[in-house]
Image 1 (spheres, rainbow over the protein chains, first blue to last red):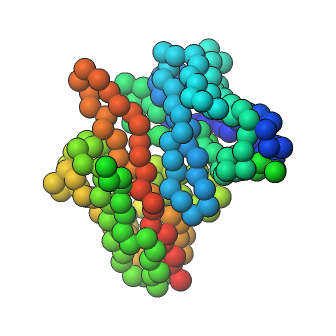
Image 2 (cartoon, one colour):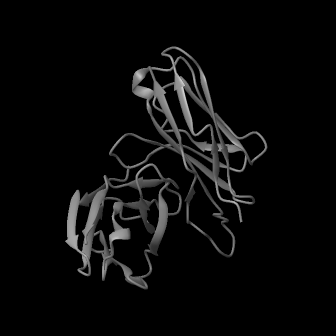
Length: 114
Length: 118
């Protein structure tokens, strides 16, 4: 089955700096890669996603890049703010004919220091 | 519109008791997923429904776990004879995921049910 590795497990940045979280996946048939933000005690919230036919996607201060050859994808947050502090999870979805569930990474605790 | 809702939000069960967890997906969403999230971990897949059909239950950890979605909308996850290792947050997610001209893979999560087995 799919295996998703995520790093770093913790990340502290100063307010205004950029943060980068990286994930690798094992199943070359995976075709959809979402990122979720989860605050303590809250539900995971979808913040950005990318499909396998796209190399990069941006939404205001957040962007995701995908390298299908290397089977890795990254989340970039620019101009970080204290409210960006949360746990971030990457995930991968199997391709056509494969499992439709998401396989999640182990999470990155991002702390933005004011 | 209304998002995914789950009930109860918290459940404390004595070891050996049966529990039932409910999920109300977003109206019209075809796909429904159950995940288990242990403290400090990412969600892990339990089972998947497309309408009323349970197409994948490979993630259910034992035969004590059972899920149903009889009318293709509300789903119930039942755990029989609960054990301490069942303590976790149980998350439900729904997705529109139609497979014709357009597909939507986005999964939207409910707030979860925190199950504590004592």
